[in-house]
Image (cartoon, rainbow, N blue to C red; front, side, top):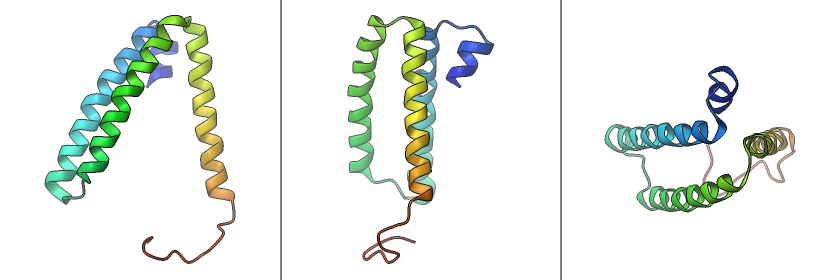
Length: 106
């Protein structure tokens, strides 16, 4: 959603980041509530830890974002996306150390 707002809609980078975070807040809250009510599959402790980490991360990101120009923010965003892509590719292609997982898995 962020690249669409920046490159297609022409929204300034800082405003696009804020708008994206605002929409993610409501999406995450909705999904959490629906999972809790329908499937009863929400780990409350994990949800609270994610909420705390998100709040701290958003504050740090806002402080860093104020110091960077729009172009620099786009570079940082693209590096994060590239890093996630490399990690996912590694996890998909790497041979696991063991095919049997004790105490969990599907």
